[in-house]
Length: 122
Image 1: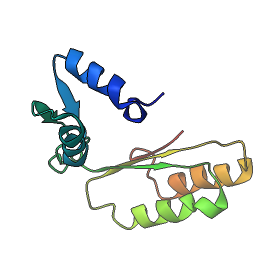
Image 2: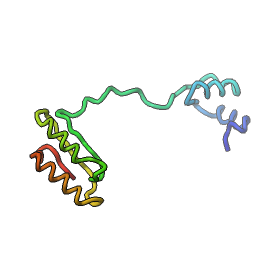
Image 3: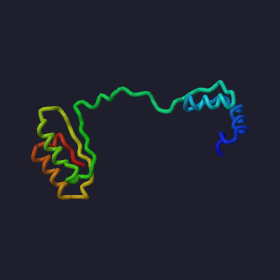
Image 4: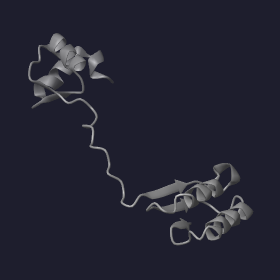
């Protein structure tokens, strides 16, 4: 039962309350109009915007997906091999079970580019 559908019960509940919190100015205005309540606190849902994350140093790249050809982890390994002069590490995290042959190709690509110390495949 919504109290708003029973104004007399809503009025009793508000009178018994030690404080009233509304999620919006609109809801507070509605209570003020219906019941004359003035001591209402508005607490808008949500949170203050956080400062942008600084990220890890050096960057740590995480790719979470099953090891499958359409996810192109071998392409990612190839791309990372082109920036080996930059500081970074990477983790390829995903199931080997869906396509064991492709999962082996991903591991082979990491080894082929000698990136075992920078890319983990789990």
